[in-house]
Image (cartoon, rainbow, N blue to C red; front, side, top):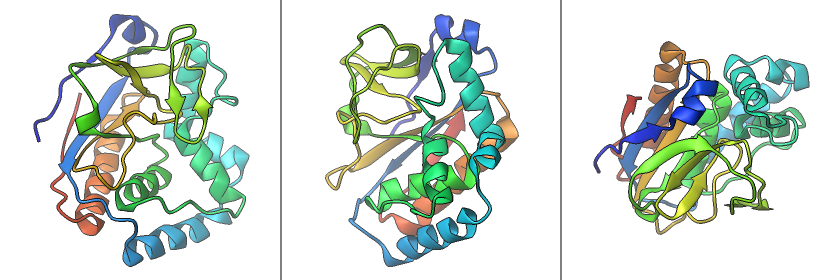
Length: 222
């Protein structure tokens, strides 16, 4: 699949001038589970759980940069946590991570390995050009497992149908399921560190190539 262009709107860049995006696309064959992936995910969670607490998580560079960006935009990052922080806090409490499907599990594993909140979408459910801007008052958005989500002042991905993604929660409209055949994954780097962003993309691409049938990940930094 072709690599989409994503326009970062001026209104967002004025507030977050360092922002860069790691963008990955891939064909995929989604399966409910993969034994090797499930084992790697569970083992990584076990290794992390004893080393994590709220303070440690807050100070992971990618998590800290995300929370600082939310504050800059006027959003409470403790009420609307970046997704990586939410996953890591769950691990710190010994709860591990849910097994969703092979693609989402790879995304979540890459997220907790790197601290980046990785946004994952079914590419076929995205229509027209993609922009990244700031959430508006009463802008409609249904988050996966969260119901209607107040996305005002969050960084928000939109297509011609409206908002479809944030680093806090992916949307029901563009969610990855077992009928998905191609994905778009986006890693926002709010501190603009290209070296760390490149490393995160390599980890994500490696997991997809290892555990997802038909995966052919390509990526670039915008």
